[in-house]
Image (cartoon, rainbow, N blue to C red; front, side):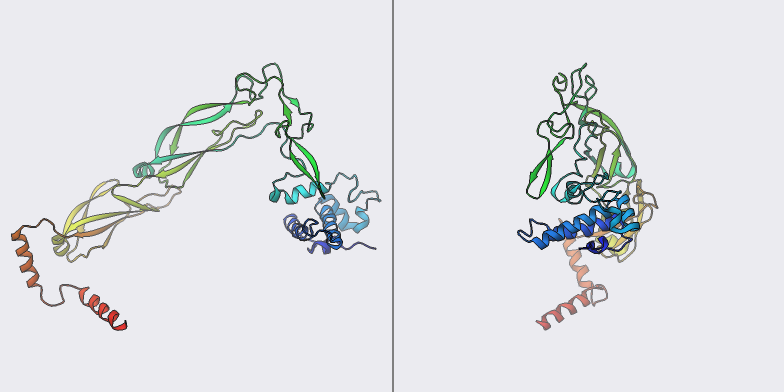
Amino acid sequence: MSKRDYYEVLGVSRDVDAKELKKAYRKLAMKYHPDRNPDDKEAEAKFKEATEAYEILGDEQKRGAYDRYGHAGVDPNAAGGGFGGGGGGANFSDIFGDVFGDIFGGGGGGRGGRGGPQRGSDLRYTMDLTLEEAVRGVEKKIRVPTLTSCTTCDGSGAKPGTSPKTCGTCQGQGQIRMQQGFFSVQQTCPSCRGQGTTIDDPCTSCHGRGVKEETKTLSVKIPAGVDTGDRIRLSGEGEAGAMGGPAGDLYVQVSVREHELFHRDGRNLYCDVPISIVDAALGGELEVPTLDGRVKLKIPAETQSGKLFRLRGKGVTPVRGGAAGDLLCRVQVETPVNLTSEQKDLLMKFQESLTGEKHSPQKKSWFEGVKRFFEDI
């Protein structure tokens, strides 16, 4: 019986890219997987058919031969070598690892987990800053606990004069294969823990780890305009790599503390400014703080509580560039407290002098709203 076209099997067009090809195979493989369809010969046949199609089309050289000559170009009995042949293509377990590795945590056909230099882990350090430091920029020294390469053994983990040996269990692969039902599953080698090498005579300084715990002092330059959540990357200042590999990076995470006067929102600053009832009614001028010093703020007559006044350019210049933001001052009219009898009498007389609705611009509309509310109940 003639085989179906591989593109038709996977349900893709002939110009499909590698990403979409893998996606199509993965969908079919998950659908017809023998573990999901026990004792279903038809599902098993479709699973094998899809796997064969992906093995050919997923290999650039084999796909080219198939596009030119069809099934004859990848026939294992022909000169080119085909599915399951010795043409250097991936075997079935390689495909399993490549396509399903991100689901089951496996590697790509035994290519991962081998011994040799490995990059060190990245580190994170949270730096607390005041608002002034974040806005203006600052340079600070920090102490970071980390793992550094052992100078005694140069990071090899072996005693000076000796060297690590190839693991006899996994033959340096870092992984071993175990047959589990339909698949050959690979696992981390228990003897070398994935390193691919073992150490018979470990270094006495690091006890075979190749790294030592130390605390180092670093100088970190914080640019002006940073905000909570921004990160600064210090290349190569993370943990030392294993087996002489490169060090990871250190990420300094910025956290800006709350300020006593200002609240920041992006490039703008907000500030609550208390004013007296007299200044609100008659108007006046008062000093307000900014990060650059004090400035005069003119309060017009009949100012209501909650009104915002904008001081342009008195905010924050963003770290990624652009114009400086503004400072928005929100006035809060204060009610007088601790009044004397004389002051209370004066206020009573003042209240009696306020006849009509023209002195309370919001009072009429508010009471009308209350009246409508109760009428609708």
